[in-house]
Image 1 (cartoon, rainbow, N blue to C red):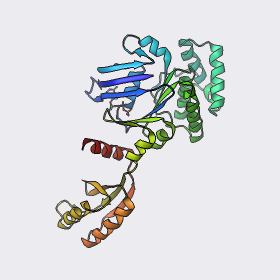
Image 2: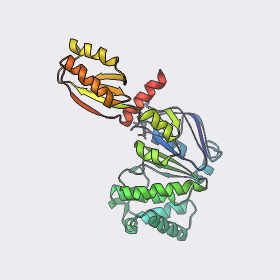
Image 3: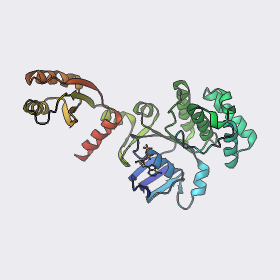
Length: 318
Ligand code: ADP
């Protein structure tokens, strides 16, 4: 359905390397989650894949068509729900008028558009009055719902959803996800970008993880979770400068030998300790802190996505 090989993109204005030999494939009937922290390159990839941004290097085919020579054919087969705030809706028209206008450009009659809009509003549990508002005065969430209906209306073979759940209430989000499941049941495919691991984990058949424009992992959610969520973090927050402190150095050397210790990083007198079992490691840490008369504040929890990605990357580099 989509095959991207070694896509590289450097923005000329600031020379940011947004994508670096990024490769991904999406199969018919698949929901692919594209997960990564802010600025990882997700939107850049989506914009290249839907044909509104040129890549510098690499090859791309969508629905079997080459993205250079057959771009027009591709644009008739894909739909795109862009990130909130980046859509091209006409501000002084209502949501409904906007959707009808854009679907007319894509070849849908007004009557058919009206029918599909009403069908989607009902399926997704969206209050139909929202679309009667002028786009300019809609809330962020209402604008996003307008964009979602606009993206779903064509029933395209390949649908790109770029962080669509931001600013939408959980009940509607749930019905959108249910709808996406149904959407792919006859071979259509979806690419869903997000920064939220649990959102992507529950919905996707496979997950691609992107960091600094590079593909870090691509696998089934269970395999990805096994890799990523095994990490936990313990932060020791020291009040004073510890870099030159002898007791701290001795503490640190012993810490590195503890079972369940994985790695650490000292940042502004906060020691970030990574563990595959924080509870158990914490017990040894408390003993060591007592031994060396150190008294930092302690915080412990699951690694957030950005940390988890850093760890994954380090692990792969080893
Ligand atoms: P994500 O969607 O994962 O948050 P983006 O693809 O939006 O990431 O951005 C990837 C990188 O490219 C970031 O460093 C971002 O600042 C940069 N970038 C995105 N769009 C542009 C642009 N139009 N011009 C210059 N740099 C950009």
